[in-house]
Image (cartoon, rainbow, N blue to C red; front, side):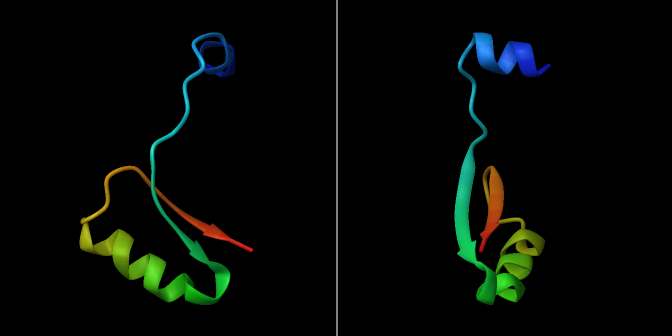
Length: 43
C-alpha cells in the first residue's frame, strides 16, 4: 500500500490540526462527525 501512495503521490485529507493542549476539543470535533478527513493532534 505504501508503494501505491508513493507512486501516485497520494496524501491523506486533513480536516483540521489541533495543538496537543486542545486534544479534548479534537476528540469532540471527531465525535461530532463534522469532519471530512483526518483530525490531527500535533505536539
